[in-house]
Length: 136
Image (cartoon, rainbow, N blue to C red; front, side, top):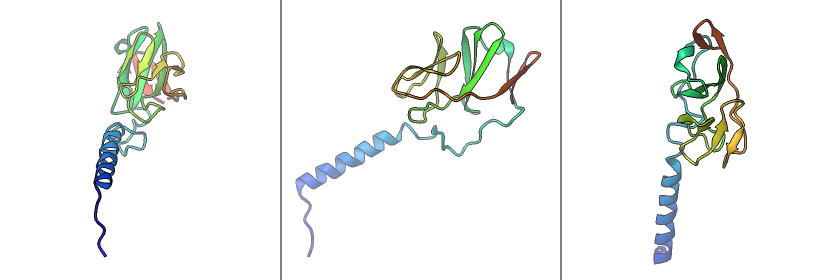
């Protein structure tokens, strides 16, 4: 016996497919389970002059963001948003910003300043020797 598709079945199936396709764009190539490697220990990320005081720089390939909340005080955090795994894309006005859903994190400690994220960005270990900032 064959099953005839009703108009309702076709519409529901089409809507579900569109929803899944739309949601998958957020994790495409930027989730924390992404197979691209993180930066290796000891790798130089930047020089101290590359990181603006009160700001920071996102290193997308290494999935790390380095900030300098106060002169000479360098911090590093994962660049993977704790909400849905998108990569943060900028540091502005004292926050590290995610473009996917608007989460913002503190440049000082990675704490959530604006959701939907509910967990802070994990700290990354760096060393500052002379003018060089390296992953520890």
